Image (cartoon, rainbow, N blue to C red):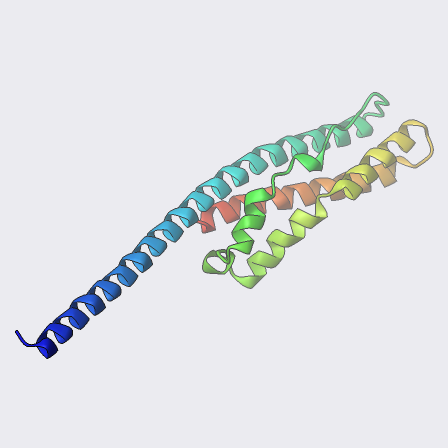
Length: 170
């Protein structure tokens, strides 16, 4: 074998090894990303199920509170706490760019809306107006309006969560 043949054979072997290692790297990266995405989607499903359970409980509490106010029961209290609504995997799902694979922009808007609507401000407002009613500082009708509005918001959030759970499949 001549020197030139040896150089060409070495070059071909080295190039083949280099290209092969790049292909293995890409395959590994693709497999890791796919596995990471699947894990994130499974975690998001768990988070959505948790939120559905929580929102169902809040909806029940608000209905019971409305009934208590309707019966003029001044012993009616409301124990909702929106800080328990899980958002971690929802935010990560959005940051990873997966949201556009599963949802229409209108779905994204609705999801964003209910995550930002159910916050400390709205929870404190309904608790405050209920407390003012107990002290006879506001009319019963105002409390009904606030509680019914809040229940509608929670119901929408629960229904939207159920819808999202169906749309986002692992």
